[in-house]
Length: 238
Image 1 (tube, rainbow, N blue to C red):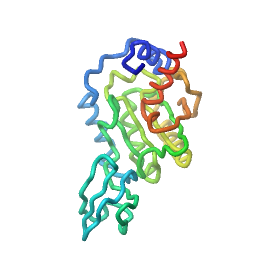
Image 2 (cartoon, rainbow, N blue to C red):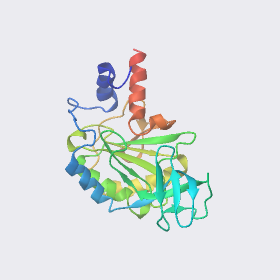
Image 3 (tube, rainbow, N blue to C red):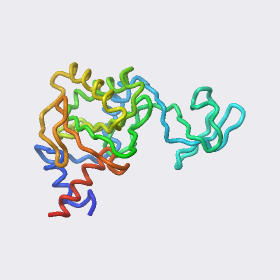
Image 4 (cartoon, rainbow, N blue to C red):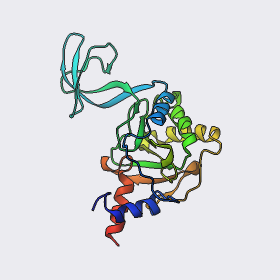
């Protein structure tokens, strides 16, 4: 049983995303191109450190580094840290924090120190924001408040897909959670009318600032993975 199963999709829409109407037909996993471009522009070109890489081979002012899937050649000073990394060492590569096609139907943004640390568990925050507030959330999560934080933010990448309790999903590990909540508090004060009370998704609990939250574990629960997992398990249990 997968997310393509109509029973799981129905449960997910009605009990997890808490949609009031029919799920919109979204033909493009990459989203509405104009809206995505606007969200990307709101990140103001912010870059951050992605710690999912290892040094493969280092030379004189150049290096090959890999995340296990893609190997990159880098020769720009300051493009990775630590500068004295040896073959096999963990390194961080400086990359744009906005990730337009990391997950289907989502625009993603990482913290200044990279994405969520999965570790031994992390928290998912579900933000029932309007599409008009999405740009402000991207700006807040690209600001100096986020420079020293690790988190993964995922927003619906089409304006007509915001009629849901999980319009935005933020994954954050315990070591960064307090900082992320302070950042979101600043956003909530400025985003008047940006939050809509849509209820509590199945498997989640009430959280601060009008959000709901859930405890997740493992990479498979990142972004929309948690919602599909708990929805599938609920349908299997009948």
